[in-house]
Figure 1 (cartoon, protein in one colour):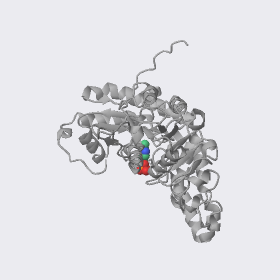
Figure 2: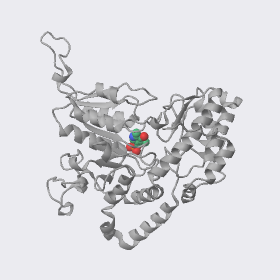
Figure 3: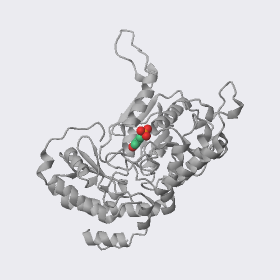
Figure 4: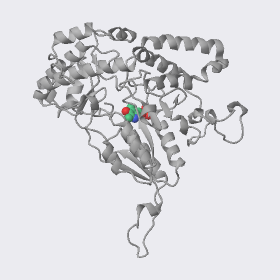
Length: 442
Ligand SMILES: *Cc1c(COP(=O)(O)O)cnc(C)c1O
């Protein structure tokens, strides 16, 4: 390859020109954006409202009023239909994704199903620096079946963990910035591992895990993989089918714009669907559901991963939320995200690093997702000043991280440029040194 000339430095003028040339610029109008409001860089926590959600909710209200209970003939298959549309964003062929429950509940369902699939295996492998709920669900599953107290004859220590027979969680000591490497995960694998459960994009640093390599390593050791795509779905192209993933989950309210508390989704590779049994035996997973049979007999396919009555009102809003992403297409969104991230990183290095900030995301653009982590000892008071001053909405993650997500579908280049200036002015102000109490929700 011939070497490309270095692109010009990002100036306010170049950002303005990038907006003018942006093929995705018109998608912003599909969202509710207050032009006088702060610059919103927190769409990785809660996506902006999609205008179409309002119409979709009104239409649903009309159906509910007009059809009442007979509306279920229309609604009953929405978990599969909306699931297939989410699947199109994450590289899953139809019939493998369902909308259901919350991400946490889906993690539990699929991890428990993976443990039950190979009862002779007792170990769950996770990432010490993963999002808390992933760790907690794995810890809870291990605690359900603790090791028996097997002592050697002399009352000495346990002979071997394995002899004790209980489940164990093996947390890989990953690099908090670079995320789990295939080599590190490989070291945690042996023939007692039932499941490797990791996030594709780390919630704090934005590090991207190598799904294909980790899937291959896990499979070589006889384990299944479960991926949490909460910070990946809608942010960057993911190929669940192509990478050889077994199981996946993700939430609906971050990059998928489904609204606060939107239902989550889950993925089960086609070949595994009939072989796994999830732990919550509900009537929506039952064969011939309306026969109301006495004993649980799950449907042979994907619907066995449903539990109870699906949240149709919320699912309709979620379906509206992913509409703009499907229309824009992940390749175009990712191209713009990379440009926005380039602008953000280069301006942050120029303007914020001299003010004491340091980048806590991978330096390689290929290895980070759709958000940037910026560490600064005054990150918490800075976040409060930015939000309370109506300047920028970032979010704060302990101990000292500002997370900034320039979500491609509705964020302008100029906004990212100006956000960095505003963050700089706050970090340089005397106010940022005044102590501010930590709040319950950050
Ligand atoms: C946001 C997020 C969740 C959220 O789980 P809920 O059950 O919706 O609260 C789970 N996992 C990861 C990795 C996340 O980033």
